[in-house]
Length: 93
Image (cartoon, rainbow, N blue to C red; front, side):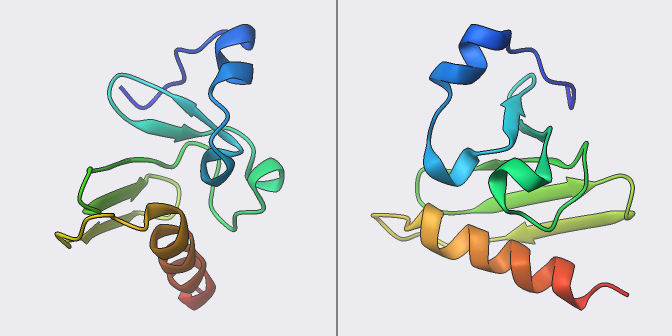
């Protein structure tokens, strides 16, 4: 589930700016390259985001699970989730 299943051409087509550095597994985004996305996460981190903005992050390396719940349309996913992730990983020692 948390392993990338996209081929090289599919990764090129998976081009939402806030998903840079991610591939896609079985229903979840999967971190492949944190530097490509400018994200302070771990390779192998995976998760999911809903239409209305709820968000899940699971990072086996850091033994970290995050569930963020909201119901807002538009969800502002590119704005809110990237900032939440930066704050969460920035707080880890």
